Length: 87
Image (cartoon, rainbow, N blue to C red; front, top):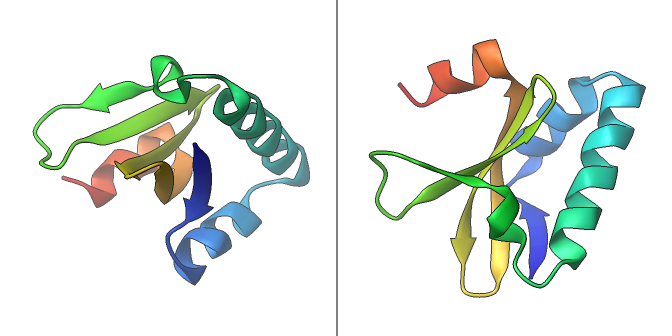
């Protein structure tokens, strides 16, 4: 499975993170998506159809959707801000 940013807006969210946070997110995503089933490390978010998944990286969250054999990243951000965009 591969992962992609949905659009330039998500790339901007990633760029706004501190350099250390960017490295940590990238390192974790590369590790998880090199595994046989990366969604074992994710939690399915309740109330979304098609389902959304979130990865927890400290106080950061990476939310996205599985489409075929790809994972599309929809949002990246701090926990206290990320869920406001959904609800």
